[in-house]
Length: 211
Image 1 (spheres, rainbow, N blue to C red):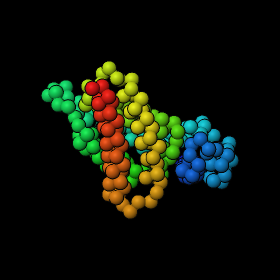
Image 2: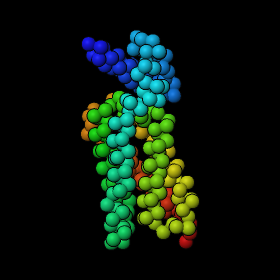
Image 3: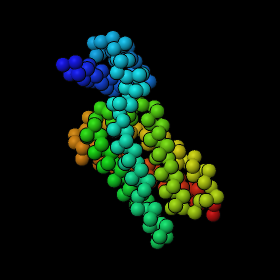
Image 4: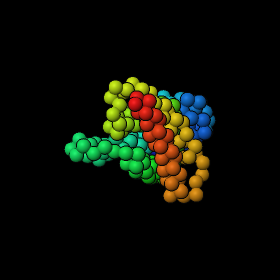
């Protein structure tokens, strides 16, 4: 009976914390408000979780891992193998196809864990981590596609700017109600392709300026 009671209390904490993080984001959420939502004292929450960060990690841990795996999958795409073994140079079409797969993966994670997914995308710490992953991928792809070794610093700045811009806009797609997962995936693919085209254009501008 006591164990059942503890599980019920923990469930109430988690549900209250999800609502608080979803509505306010991690930074503005407070343990006091979570306690109020759960109809218990703050002290009672601390019996289950050390701090707000621990509650957040418990809620988003699995979803965060899924997103990281999707990004790592994008980073370890067959582009690496083909480039090293066959000397194949990827182009904007290849990049767009890779981003299409990434969009499908993201939507799949979102459909499975909507609240947790949105919470992650509105958390500044998580956004920084995801932006960093995306930036490294973009930089790697561009340095592979184009003869720009002498301009790695400039490419790094451009790709970092694009990575930040992409993740600044992504939460809008997931917080707004979509007609279906298919519709959401298509919108994300368009979104990613626009950025891929813009990035390709900017890099070509650098190449033209060198001639």
